[in-house]
Image 1 (cartoon, one colour):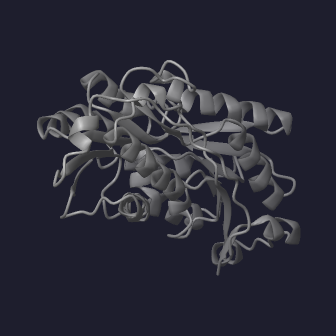
Image 2 (cartoon, rainbow, N blue to C red):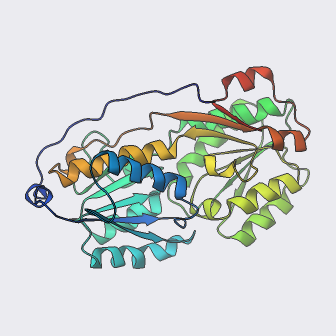
Length: 323
């Protein structure tokens, strides 16, 4: 069950040239979505986004068309996909992740863009308070969360001899996250091993290389890891490595533990920004906001399979327990 939610306000915005178009009766709005994974794998977030839009009066098939494009875990595809969306004359583009948002920034300076979640927003916008230009949205990560994840996973493995971090260093957002993980591991007196994964083959090799070197794992959320989440959860189980994940979607197929922002909540909030823009707000005047809802989810079945006893104090802090 869920126990915690932190609520933050959303700032208003000034007029934007789309206002006249947004007020035309009978108009059908076309929203492009540039995503890292397929619509099927992204269904929970898509559902939250659709519900948010529907609450604001936008209904698919009546006054709304969603154009979904997925890179299927391969960031090299983003420039072609964003060109497709631009060619469809979309009114707004919704992105997720630093590579997708950077590709969109490089492709258009006129179409409004809402980031549903991005690791390093300052790689894309001028400032969080006043982004400027045509891009705004929501940060998907806060740097202090990486230290918290190391704290949580080592709480599960008392006397841990080391921690490994599974991430894709070709993602521009991974560098700052790695620095936070290194600082957090150092503060606990633990060695941190970096596993740079850019394909499914890299992931399998990374787990093979872990034998005996680390007994706890932190998995970062990005296109390659998202697209291979079932594989990662299966390999963690096979090699009996307790892992904490940066995305909830890893826990449902068998991952041990998730701690971080609620991505569906970010998508629901992204719908409010899309609505503001369609009604005339300038994206550059809408602040890039931080996550407001965080979750700790523990998979007890996986813990039992790994022979781990979850400390009662940790269970008491969990927002949801999967049994």
